[in-house]
Image (cartoon, rainbow, N blue to C red):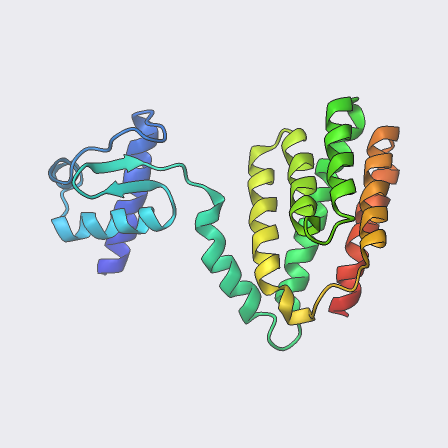
Length: 221
């Protein structure tokens, strides 16, 4: 019953934030006012706030008060990491799920760029591709490449999800062994994506993104 009450309070606090139009960084009412607002005990309010803090919805600053959080997708990282590892122990299904969702998102986001003629973006992508030839900067350049695409596509939520998936994948990649893609092949498959974007061809983009994921998919099978 206590857990149920805590969840109900957490939902009510979220509704209060929305009702009052509060944004990230805005202060929440102090505990006594929340207790009066919802007719709840102090411990119940504190438990609800801790639940929301774990989700990034509120930010508890001891000695200062409680504030609205940014609700970043990074708050989901521990649970997604646990799920991926737990469901990959026997048949790697957790990693397969992660890869499939990431490919779906990245394919559609990259296809959106076919309608743009953003020369600056193309140059930024090309610069990351060049850095992929150097093992010392390859991993960072690879991550930046995909983040640039997601940001340019203009979907903030999708960009956050891609960053989350990338982080979890990097932490679980050891389950399928080290990457087998030599640097020249890594460069080539990312350059193929850049060329497809430059050509403004959605079908070529979809094929280039699929090809990009083939190496990982092969390791999974």
